[in-house]
Length: 382
Length: 183
Image (cartoon, rainbow over all chains, first blue to last red; front, side, top):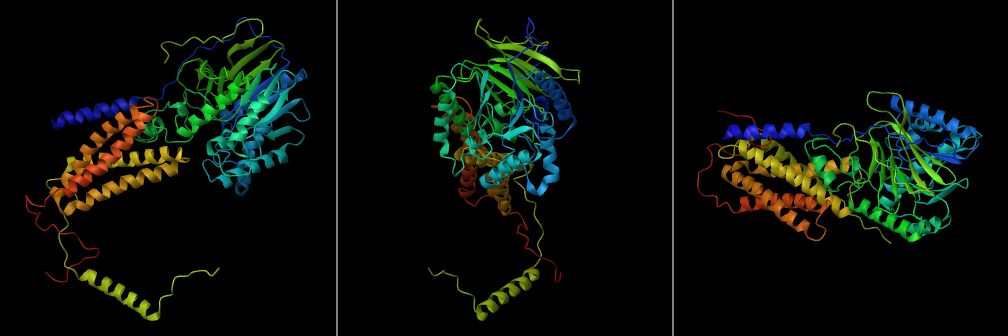
């Protein structure tokens, strides 16, 4: 009987050890017919690029080449960095030599004195990764100051950059309307002089109503839906025997979607999007270290893009509405044409180290119904 | 507004405190050394120790989930680790502290084990009402398991009547410092 108990324990442990966080495997899929390479405006989305490593170097180098090509035609271009711009705890004046270069590398792909604008959105790590509110706010403001210092003729800014939730807005020519939100502030709601969460949501509604004839892209660090670790996709033995797994599933961390604070933020953002009468076409975020394209009817913003693998990588499983997902490093690109919005995912596929276009589709068209079809699963998939 | 300060100890009080401390330090080594008993001796042996470990795990995890759910979520891994480790250490320490009475220790530990099972089931049922899905049932199950471990352990320890098997021979606790004066 005792021996049977040990056998059961061993078998259970082995099974649990073999369980890994799921990663769906898609074939690369580019839109057919090929997308028109002459946009009126372009938006690049890069997230969680705050760690200095080889992978990030490759991503930023490829980004630079695409930015140069896009800006050559003179159309407005925005490069949006979706948070966690400096790992591990944001900008520290006491660690200038260590932290500043992480930011400088991300500024470098933005050409000086050009039609390219760089926007950095604060993430949870930029808020001193769970540190006290005043320390986090100081880190955000330090990052804003550093961006001003290292710009050297480049048009770069931290938006919202004052330690308040925003929203900050930007017109991408006449082609699109960009809205930037500090979602970490929304999770914390620290006592400060920002006017409180209610006034934020009122401002958000009002801003969305301004340009009803343009596609709106809202951006923050935290996604509203994800198949990555922050959406519960963790392995049972990750970071210890079941504790982290159970804690994640039970909504212990404020940074996970199932926590009450995060779920409340999603509900309120969605409500504001809906009430405005002009919900975003796209909500883009980072936070999970992968690339995901999700089309959902459950939220007001039709397309949910997770572009968080600028320097780190984590698995993403297939969830309702997933069109494409990969744990490879990369970024995304949105091209705005007169009557269409195109999406391109730039990353690596299995067995390859070089970045390339691995997924593309039409997100919206004024002439035809577009649903951005799902890529084909490789083998069995998950 | 006058600031209220605690009264400063007089020299006599200070001297008394130091004398008391000195006496305690001198007397402790003079206690007769006793054989050290195992922390988990008969009847509470390896199996009992494993149950205590599992119950402590439940208490730590339950405490973590309760804290996080009540405050909207923890912000850092370190904060979570502190809470979990505190709950775990409290329960393990409580179980070991009963080492002088093996039978009581056994009842407390197995009581906590039963409490984990009952508490998790009750917590799960509570969690499925209303919300019914999402993280709530798991969270309430984990909180229930932790609470059940504590309640079951207390019940087991306090309802032991102390009768039954005699104490283990030489089963006295070891003083802090101990060496033999003479044999």
